[in-house]
Length: 460
Ligand code: BGP
Image (cartoon, rainbow, N blue to C red; front, side, top):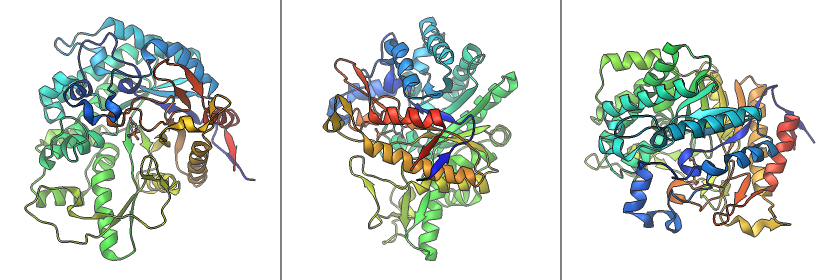
């Protein structure tokens, strides 16, 4: 048996988001999710929409007790822009301020550090009608909202994040059709991506200029990109996938500039977004203090089998094919590969190529369908989840021992929650919830996590 010890003051906890947990009570305006659910309820798993959550809005006191019971010393929540601000007048909603004050204070009283994310896929519908992040005016509204959050909560919140997985709304909303506004147009997608990077920098600028005592970062979903073979063509394909899906955000938010190879590709396809020299200066100057890394699965890539059609609409897959590596271990429910070493490779890449920037694992976890099958003595015996988290933590521990500057691990997620189009299909929590009675029950993994966090170590 080997014992894996983590650094002192390591952050242990989990992450969640407003739209997925709070419920829509007392929110006047819609998000794009409410709107999309109204328009196309059948695209959501079992027709369950964002009004059907685990009700954190009313039950946060009880939930924070459960965080304690499952060994949290930190927790990531997000603030809902539509809850906090009237989308017509930009006035702050005092009820929302009170709610977030209560949550933040309750967390602090329980010695759970709040990590606060400002945007988790939840564009207000009225802002989407004005163009969403295609519009620089909406970027400025977003900066105003973020600045308001700093003024209201910055005395107590010391860890801020500008975005969760900013590439996902670009992929889903402008390329692959799994997020509103369901547009398939790479040119518009790259404009949204660029404007999101600019919004990140402008929000950091606002935070830094006021001189708050805290750190500000971003949360990226990094998918290490592995070639099928060491053949030049396969390696090149993997490098290009890495440019599109990782470095398109990772480089500008940490180094203040885009990889030249990515810019060259965009130029070749006439996909370079509109920008000004001033925008580039802002991006260069205001980079993140720390990085949250969401890691679920790697990307396996091979050189294309066929010649791409230059006249077809552009997708990054112009340059590679996804590769289903024989023998890879899969999570059969979510259809994602399980590859714990990926977490190590990400951390070593950050150490070697990104100035060993402070980072933490901000999401990692295993979605499983129909977990009621695994109930024993009234509790879900999710040994598969314990194995999943443990194997990732062991690789993370190795990266830390080799010098990676990783300061914590948050699992996705605290309690089973509503997950966008997948609604309640895949359950991820340390805690299960009966979405009819709202009864919460700690799973085996929640108890195990408490042991890990209280000993700051684990055994294999
Ligand atoms: C991440 C998101 C989360 C959550 C999770 C699970 O990418 O940040 O919000 O939804 O994925 O997603 P799913 O339920 O689709 O498996």
